[in-house]
Image (cartoon, rainbow, N blue to C red; front, side):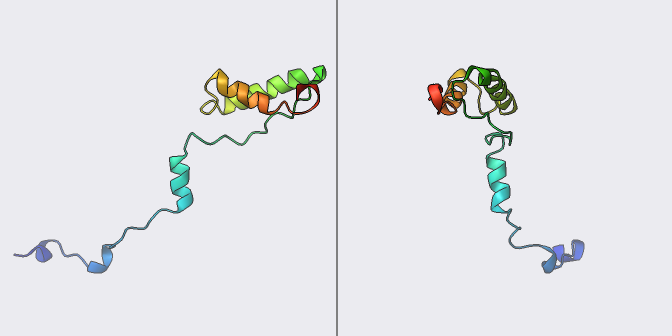
Length: 90
């Protein structure tokens, strides 16, 4: 008795090379949890007092949505400083 008699298999049914996932799928899998969620970052802060509350609120929203990336104060401070470019804040 041969295996062919008990388990007849057509050779065309077995793929020799399984299909490879697309590069975008592989990259998305590798970077899962490492890419910022698409939320508008805060506007550039110029040092004007009337912009401060919005700047802080917008930054906090960005941190909350991207908590996996901004998981310590050093990262949050660096992020906020990068948006303090113009006026007296720059």
